[in-house]
Structure formats: C-alpha cells, structure tokens
Length: 276
Image (tube, rainbow, N blue to C red; front, side, top):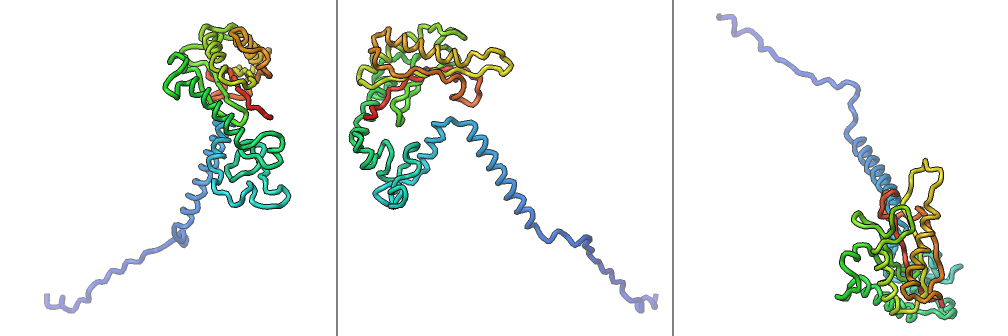
C-alpha cells in the first residue's frame, strides 16, 4: 500500500485520424445546388413555353417590356432602323412612339393611320366587347351562354371566341350541324356587331385526334364549321359583304395544354381593324 504513491499516472491520448484528406469543406455542395436549381428553372421554362399559347406568350413579353422611353422613338437611336424597333411590326413594345400599329411612325401615318384613329377604333371595339359580355352592367347574352364566350382586343381586332365546355357543345359531335346554343350565339353576335361596321373574319378550330387515324378529319371539319358559322350569321341578318375571310385551322392552334381537350373545339369571330 505504501508503494502506490510512486506509481506514475496513466495518460490516455486520443488522436483523430482523417483518412483520404477529407472533402475540403462544403463548397461543392453549393455548386451542385446551384446546378440543380438552374436545371429546374430550365425545364420549368421549357414546360411553360409548351403549355402557353402564342397570344399568352406575347402578352407576357409585352408585360415585361420597358415602359419608360429613352427617346421619342422606339429604338432610341438614329441608326439603320431610324429609331424604330426591329420587332415593331410583329409585337407591341411599350417603349415610346415607335413603329407599331398602336404608335405608328410618320411614315406609317402617311398611309392614313395614326394614334388617334387607332385609339378611337379600339374604343369602339371595347364598347362592343362590353355589350357582349356585360362589363357595362348589361348584357345581351344569357349567363349560361356567357360561359361559352371569351373576348380579347388585339392588334388584329376584337376576337370573340366561342367554345365547347363539359356541359354543352356548339355542334353535334363530329359534325357541322349547329346546336341551338350556337344558333343563339350567332344571332346575338349579329345584333352586337351592328354597333360597328368592321369587316369580319371567321375561323374554325378543333381538338386533335389520335395519330393512328388513317383519315384525320381535323382540316375539313374545322373549315366546314367556320363556313357553317358564316351561314348562320348571314342567315341572321349580317351583311354578306362584311365577311372577308373564312378559314379552318384544324388542331394547329390549341387553346389548352391537352390537344385532345374539347375546349379546343371553338370558333373565333374577329371584328377586324380598318387598315386604312
């Protein structure tokens, strides 16, 4: 017992071994996360481009266009375009008073169109639109029929879109025989369009069919339905000379993402602008 005081204390030393040199921090994780985020954004962009229509994409482009002009003309310079935007004839950039149908240049005004005439015509088309869908508090259309109508004012004119929904269709399935719903719509359009004297275009669209069909009817059906609508409108009192174009677009311009959706069965009646 006396000898225990001479025993040296036991010291335990723990050594942490690092094998392989470690991963030198977490910087690679940040880089990988950035890569994954970029790829997700890319595929989201591709999906959105595929899921939207040309009109929707144009609306988005116009929304993000700059609205503060840096010069009295669109381009802001006096170079090759003379201050006009390279996109001036295919879009409506909100960048001043450049060469668009909404803001024509002096050369465009020389053809007979100007800002004031464009604005006045737009106001007239808006009036027709308000009468049609009841934005002014009154409508010539029954609420159930309003479910089949969408309108928009574009550079081409007032587009009145009539379409099928789950509850009712414009035509008897796979035929050009109009249902009573379309007959009522045609008569209503004739009455409302009498507020203006714009020329009219009628366009037919149908949903896609399976690719396995040997005789795909989409072209014939869309053009025949447009012609049937023309006949309904002229039969309801529309001046024959006001209709200048009747076309079928088959399933080439879908309204919703699913190409086979009945919502793609539609007619577009366009009150065309006067191009001077």
